[in-house]
View 1 (cartoon, rainbow, N blue to C red):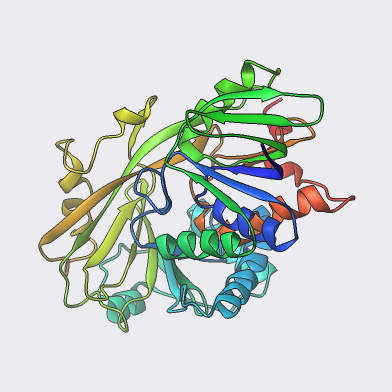
View 2: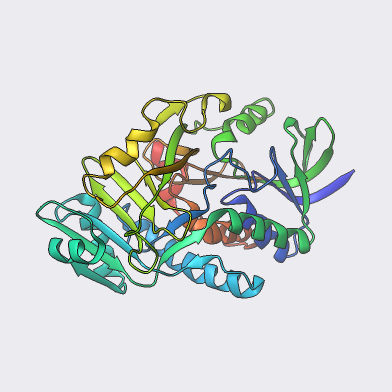
Length: 373
């Protein structure tokens, strides 16, 4: 029977890079996924994800983002692969909103290379129509990463470093021995000393297996269906428009310039909660899908053209919408609630490696389960 130092369950946003950094450190690593990465059953598919450091979600994320930025560059050099388009990010919102106040505070506190612009400048530069008292914060050296390409690159590099892949198979049982766990599916069994659980919206299925063999803390995570879509546009193109976030009408739009396949737009706060994986239906099966983004966004982005296509994805949500990064016991490290997590993929992968290899490593209490009492 194969024996491993560590098993990564869920080879997506965190898992692919955790596998890479663990294997690079010399740990005998197993990569397990119910599908074959990259796939469209999770949260990272759809080609691109924004990378920004001026962060409206809170300053506790900034140190990780700065480290992630460096690691993305290092990983590109090590693999000789273009994964990061440094075209900049424009963040737009009301000057007194918490989101924009947090962004400007992070710019000032961390001396980020940003430019603050007014309504007139936003409309002249980007052809977005914004209300009075809206401002923009343009972050010059960030942009977006190629998400699917990143996953396949990181998992392939892990394999080159000796990691073994177990894909396209569902884990049916987990058993506990004195010093290891037995991971069982229909067609394989192996032993592992440690586990990184990074299965996103499928984490509950693994947690239910673990509950049969050990007590677990309450983990407040939920699944939310999200959509994004591509639209024709001759104005919102690469070179004229950076990646963007746009807080308005109680929601956050985000998007990417047209590079030939369309102007991509998503919404961050809307969506549908669900329980079982089959309940996350494809784009278009809900009546509101097409109009949820395009018709609303045209009020502020008048140069949106005809609809091209749309997709749905899954967001793993925590109760407070912040990350959960914590040990469930001394052997199992859990990553959950990473609804805005792809930009952090490199640093969270490195964190997984450090958690199991550095004697004095400590988790950040901002992201542990302690905050839920």
